[in-house]
Image (cartoon, rainbow, N blue to C red):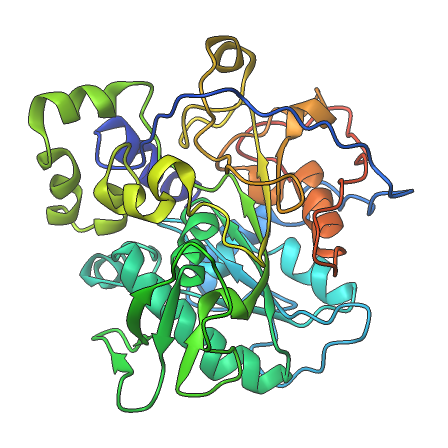
Length: 389
């Protein structure tokens, strides 16, 4: 099952069936200094990923410890329920065996979902999720927030933590209004509920009349206080330059072949895909919706969401695919190796990386309306790639 978790995204990228994005521009420098005194303690090594692997044998559609998905009253210190969103070809039980109990132990109300099922999900024995189109998956997230999280907590907004596609897809939710009335909701063949998408928000962002109050119509931007992305595919991936080359040779077939192969989300995460172009807007104008905070946590060794924020790409002036454009009061892009040079985690291991998880906890501690610098995490002597925690 480790091979499954590794091969799905790796094969997709290698065959130009998966993520891709390239960009140009200056690499942002995080000039902020921390005003926090200490970072959360890292989890003990090996507490999560092996349990995630075991869950692939025992309960791939289940939920990890700490996920409540039911009535929960957020404490004053953590007023925003946390929604965990896994990546392409993964599931919640595999992805959040460490982070979910960390959050629950800290007092958060924790929710998670499996989303994006299609025929390939059924063929895989319900191991592989997040394969359907990103638009449909965002509609599922809208339904989950509107019909589960908000009613069960009474909260007005949520914080979202996502990995890979799960760090990018919620932006599609944020950028739209949704009709979640009983007459508008549809249920697909796999039992997943989808709210009807309404017109895209204008560039002024939140505040066009809809609210996140579990009523018929909700506004994505009003529902989300913060989005924390772990190696999010915000600009897709370019497969080390192969995706742009294939686009030049084969045009839209580069994006449609993955859909025909059973993974629409893979094609939509390729460089230059029309979906990502619309999501990010002209010159990145839609990347950070006003009123929402964005923390991006990425590895310089990311082998899937490329270009990665490493020294070579910085020297070339290449914008890292995971990073977002936006004001410093609203967007923070963090590179793990700038905090801990001994951290060798990459795209697959980042969900269990003790450094990344400290950053997630530090980000979620921000209950305000402006980005706060992340405290310096405790650095392990060494974090291996892939099996990172």
